[in-house]
Image (cartoon, rainbow, N blue to C red; front, side, top):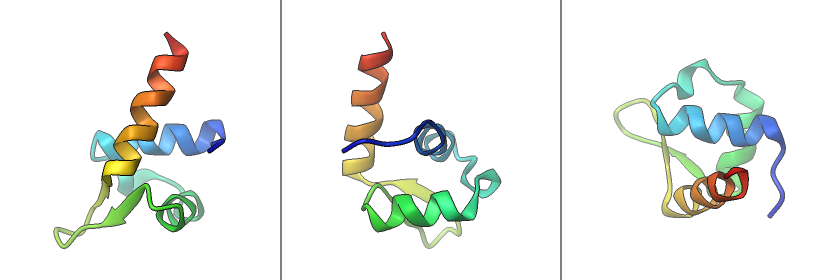
Length: 62
């Protein structure tokens, strides 16, 4: 799955618990793809698939 730079940066921000600072449209796009979900503690969290994609993108950058 190909993601834009903005989507990869948003995944990184969600991982660091800065999801509330991200663009709502990008968050909704990642939610539809199953990479993040809205948690009951009122914040965005990465799903298992989101962690996998995040780690794969980090390996490509190294």
